[in-house]
Length: 67
Image 1 (cartoon, rainbow, N blue to C red):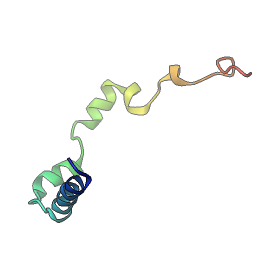
Image 2: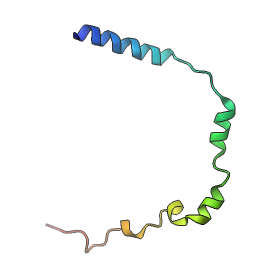
Image 3: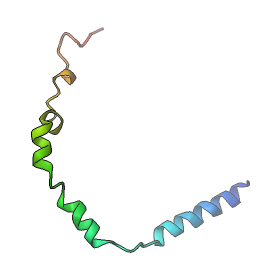
Image 4: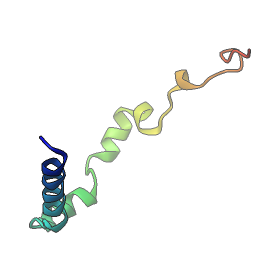
């Protein structure tokens, strides 16, 4: 495919994306923004994942080799 045809197709797709406006589902958006209703329960079950208390990721000075 020539560069002209390829560029024309890309331009067409970009224009469609620019002017495309889907119907907004405001009730779904509100549910997403409200957050997880089970958040407190999840934090109690897995606190190490919630707060990032992963001690293995920390590097000590002994782990770092200098040249």
